[in-house]
Image (cartoon, rainbow, N blue to C red; front, side, top):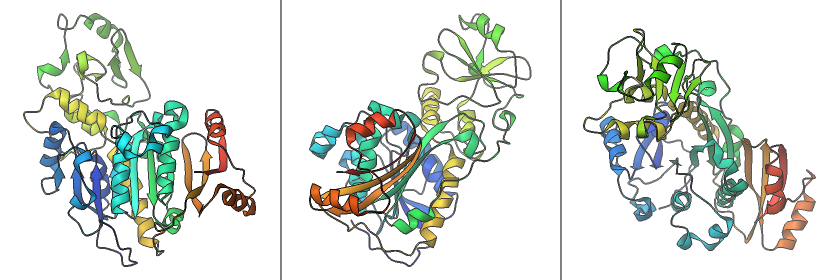
Length: 406
């Protein structure tokens, strides 16, 4: 399936979403009233139950992404492809071998969908540490793969408490790409905003809840340590196997997919009545910025629900990014530049430290020598940076601006 690019703006932009989880990314985009989800894919059967309960009208595909073809998406066009793929080991050598040798790397399956659907925009969310994974190789491969497919990309690490007005310390990297330089130039990540949402807005400190959430003397062998250290309602705590971790500044620590496993990592609070309890699954979704109307399915274990919340996203951050994506798409009139081709890509990259940057293919040429001559002809005076030099410099986390050849 391919898209025919038109300057006529659609009523709403069509989204195809992969690795959907419970649909947090899609929800943030839909809250702008500029996008609609025409296809979602999620392999985990428990996450699908939560997704379907909250999005009963969305086409939800439960197959492994390896079995999905671009033409399976039930829409004439796909304007945006999005996904928060699991961060697995990537290798430059593996990528060079092509898809047949890299079925385990789920990013390449998402890339296959991008190549097949040719959307106007792409959106990727992942853990902050992806940029430094495998000494920088992982992000280098992702960046080059997207730009070589003619997408103009920008990325930035944003914290939920600083950009979503949600009291959770959650840093994630967001990658946004467009098929035209005009839309890319128009797009900017949102500005930092003041945190005004309090713990009391997302956590119920007053009501008596199910006994399963409480820590009691004789119930946990580490209760005495909890009782000694959990003393403030202005703080969220965690039991970390051998010690109590106190998270100050009135924010919840980063929710993780393994919280609750063995009784560990779930945020703990001191209630108004002086009792110690862990957050409920509903509260963990509150801490991700899900609306109060978000439903929790019956018959799904708390362990699975904690996993779903920990794997999810800060919805208000997604919404703010989505608003700027829509603005860039609405105001750009340029024709898609996806048809550019050549044997060798000259890639421009600018990095403002390790956690923010932009990149795109400046030119395609037919030989390495032509690439060198092209770079010399540019009036910006930027140097050609080898892959080896890049990996050395990126560790220093400074500002970089350079060309590379692939």
